[in-house]
Amino acid sequence: MATARSPKARAEALRLLEECRITRPEDIDIERIAEANGVEVVYDDIDGATASVLRLGELSRIRISSRIHDLGWQRFTITHEIGHLRCGHVVSDGDAHETVERTCKPLDKTRSIPEREASVFASEVLMPEPMVKPYCAVPVVTLAPARAIAETFTTSVLASALRFVEVTDECCAVAYCSLGRVRWLKPSATFPDWIPRGRRLDPRSAAFDYDDSGTIDAAPQLLSADAWLPSDRVDGERMQLVEHSAVIAPLGVVFSMLWIPRHEIRHLDLAS
Amino acid sequence: MTRNSKRSMYEALAHEVAMDAAARRELTDTQRAEARELLAFAQGKLAELEAKQDRCKGVRPEIRAMDRPSVLKRLAEIFKLQPRAVFAFRDYARLSDDDLRLALEDAEQMLARLS
Image 1: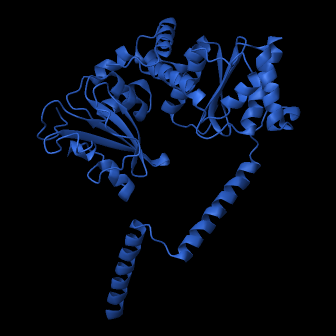
Image 2: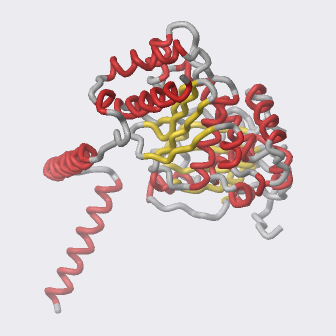
Image 3: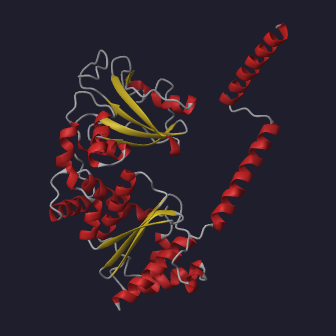
């Protein structure tokens, strides 16, 4: 079940899908969407930022860094910037100078709500829930459905895994890890909120192997749940967890799809 | 034959010790100094290459010559003239001075088209 986060961004995304008469994944043509919204997209050698958007009057321009080579990342970034325009993230009427200064400080907390809204918008436009839902009906939760979503919707596997977690009814989460620790976790509505940021990876997990040896087992693993969840909260002997991890090598990052099955699994029969 | 065998054994042992030290992240002072030198060399080379790149292509000379406070001041003036303006960027670290100059060039061009 999708969470009710950023309702304004979700509503705006649905409005755009209707306006552009998008009913199939192959209709999600970002260049056409940008054009329909009067946005000029420029691919350029920008410096610190990976993308920027500027609107004055009815004129809008998005600049995308030529450092972004991955098509899925490009599509997400352009749609994220269109999200700023559609969600009306205008420069405040108050002190414009202060606003510009604040906008230029990316760690400023005031940026977090517009940034989240723009990302929710992008996710809804690129992977509309009704179109993604069929990919979530799987007997075993691994990264396989995320990879299928990525292929169909031309998105990154990580963005697709996050979308899967939003839409599915299964008890699962995506853990984003680097340097042997969990950096953040995106849980489904039913996944327990028991994995804190900064938690050390357990040596039994595949994600640990990447930090330890630079290699990772590409196959899903069936583990005791306490390899990821706190042992005082779960019966590790009885509770099972499936982990399927993948690496983003340029960032030195591992992301793992974690799934707590409803029924006991004797072995991972990935053919089923 | 004996010499070769001993050398192979030494190499195997040295390799194991090095792998073990690497795993424990132990380095000698000399290795640390070498690593620091290598890092400084790589960073210097990167800075050199970046300085050669012209990231302000298409930006008028007057804007190129502006410092960050002047660019911000002019952008603020433009946003006052266009109260429904949107300006955002997606970033991992910062919006550089050159990116700001490019944004101002865009803003000036748009302003000219709007007037």
